[in-house]
Length: 315
Image 1 (tube, one colour):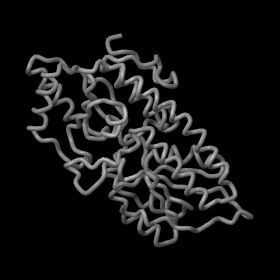
Image 2 (cartoon, rainbow, N blue to C red):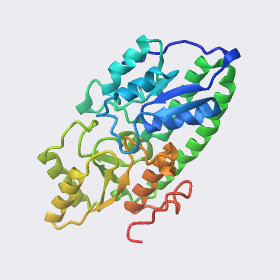
Image 3 (cartoon, helix red, strand yellow):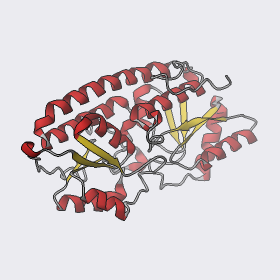
Image 4 (spheres, one colour):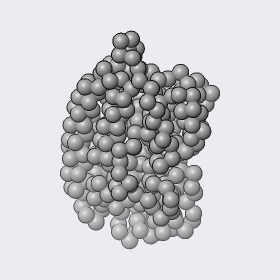
């Protein structure tokens, strides 16, 4: 895969260890890196709340942060496609540039027809897959800082135990949705791994990248699906325009079928920094709980960690 060769092997001397200065691209990558590095490094995320990584172009300030860092972690699978040149330049200058999806086997990855030749990059939507990214971060840190490898491995182990519980919560919650209502319609195809992992049909109005446009035929087809299946809720995303979702709602209304926005989901970006939804666990907890309740299922009040505070639609 592109850029998988950018795994450089400079090692920090243990006798004069200094806190690692790490740059990460998305919030999801930054959060798991913080969980693993613990007190031995600081992590700066380039992309904040509501930022779309498909469209993101690094600024001159980003370039300075990258060049001043010890390590750069990115998601990979062409999610940050417009940053490729920046990664290549950093690697040529001797920086450690690492894709956290490195350990995920190609047999797991999805290659939707409209994305032929490229993998679907949204693997963090399956918590069990993102656990492998946590292990990849630990391995990369161990290569660069052998002295604290045991701590990195232990941090990864403890965090993955939390993720395993979140994964189970997702399975149980989505399974509680009535089968005929188990359809997730969102702005773009960011939830395919989520659908496969947790047993819910996923339909995105746009394709995998937010650079694509939904046509009138696509919208009309989905309006007919809403009406025919009696689906009453669709979802908007925090980092994608809600224009197409609102078109679905209006189209269904013209056919005498009421559809509401079931909630705002986090797809390519997490919530506000410093909040629960600004963590990977909080992001997925919010999505799972919101989807479950909006589609008529049963989720723990307050979500996985009792922090979402979202009631059932209509309560």
